Length: 368
Image (tube, one colour):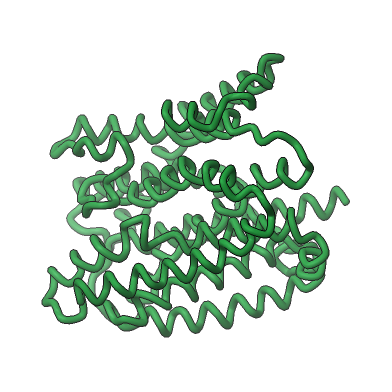
């Protein structure tokens, strides 16, 4: 059993490492618009993989208590999330405030994704995550019955499709000239939380199956490689749907198919029968551990590389960018992220920890 547990963890680490590498491929400056460049730019899908992983891991934290008949520690949940994400984010945001132009007030309260963030652009996905952390415990508290929680998953996916469809019909980015088409698409369909919940919802759905439908879950876990194959088929379908920029299919079904693919991929990584659970890629665990810090700092590293070199397409520029990405991420990880996690562990290890679980749900919401 210990081996299986280790394999499952390594499978998720592999997916985290894959997600951050995809993001780096997408964000590294490129020239041209050929087939190869477009394929590299599909690395933006790494963010959706992060969303699925986050939904599964965060959903499991609360569902475990419900499934075992225990009192849900909402206060502990908020404390864990606060110390996990906010210190590193605000340190990097502070660096951006020292630069020109400084970010606006929206960045302080995670609302920049309802605009078109020009500065610290990757932070839009952190807004989606933080808003999810804030609302999800209330959602669980209201729909505490397992049947309601599970049926809310397809309902939310259907609602997401409707929201994106209506939004697309209102703004019609496919009829606009560039660069206005891109700005409209990103501002109304790509960045807002209301259009980007598919991945998190599906991740929560995986956690709900694990904790509330154990028989079905064990049946799925016995079919790890079938899940992996299904993920590949759905991924191919999503790429076809996403390939035509700004189309109705790209803006609606494309996101759903993509996140369904990553949901099957995540479930496969959790299965001890899957290839993903059996392979061990050197460095994947280390990259996974650094992934949050890399995500927060890689734009700073790329901007500095751009100031040093006239273009990004020489070997010295690429090596410098890689070195700066690792340097900045290492400084943030060891200087802020790990101390914050150590503080969290010390606080939660205190004998007084149970009092957090007794807080009413309004208290952590109002103090977030």
